[in-house]
Picture 1 (cartoon, rainbow, N blue to C red):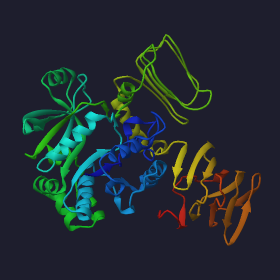
Picture 2 (picture 1 turned 90 degrees about the vertical axis):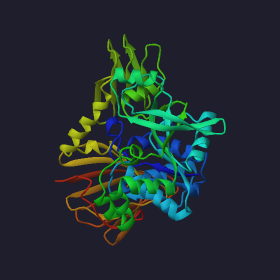
Picture 3 (picture 1 turned 30 degrees about the vertical axis):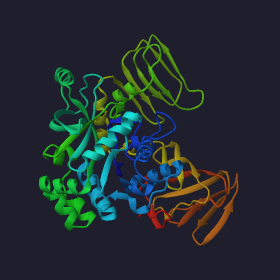
Picture 4 (picture 1 turned 180 degrees about the vertical axis):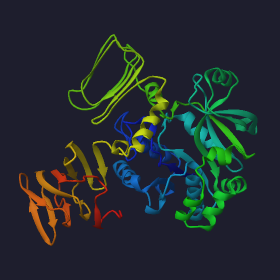
Length: 464
């Protein structure tokens, strides 16, 4: 079985924990692994590394590569597809499936979102084995057996059983249902409906034929145009709406395992362990903990000492540059905050104070309109692009390691405590030639300090 992992989502309903340039599939908020890494490990149950494909975008490319490197998993470079723009799940899946068929011929493909939390056990493996059999003739989705009425998930009504001898492999899909209100959700659960997991398995030939039949504009664009042009032409459309709800070949395989799409802070609260007062607490950093006085049933995720007194049913998310407070049950509305920030061109919709780059990372320590102070870490053997800024000068002080610095036509080595100055308009580059992480304090001064004031002349990572 081949695996196609979808890793291009922005996770806007988890702001400020998730940002546009560091979405939830790469954030490590449950344990030491990202959700993307957990998805790759699930894919390895059925696929070899050369049979795993990832659809993401240019901004997330190096997050994908870094997470894979940490796992010790190497995918062929051509197995990572970079969407020019996000157009929901159908274009991403069509492009990925088409490429898989071009590489391997007609194949069974499992499609996995990269941002779900799923228990992997014997029941999980048996469900995928049944799905692989059904995928020869059907477009298979996985239905999660509900644990309670839930208004945040879509539902699937199973129809006629599909058998292999006396063994039931799955069911024809009788109907897909949108997210219901609570009373309707209760009726669905009582009637044996399943939650729609957003995971699929099908044969490439069957999927491409059904997509051509039900969304010919998508198929035509990818068959006749370049990828860039195809993404310009296709509508923003989900695979459920474009294909699964229209085809007569949809089947559902029940999946009786713990599953959570972590699509909101309410979902995260459900996934975390609770203390004796029903509080779910995730703290980050030294000397960081929660003190709760008469506080119950709260979700608290913070990066500093946090005390709550006499509060119940709250979502409290405290990062180094933003604070979110909401009632539990209102978590789906957080995306409105993200939308407001985007409309104001506030970069806090895009990045945390710590931003990750293919060469390392930087953390903004302090800033105002005329200056910004960063701590930069450069990994051994890595270097920033050869670049120039129009509107700011930079002053670098080495804190740890050895820095190789190019300023114009001159190259120098700097050791801890040594510094240099780069005037605005000067071509420059920072490199770590050593064996340990390089740490540099950078002070920017200028009338404009945005991250887009950069002209790259050379770049080891292929960035524009």
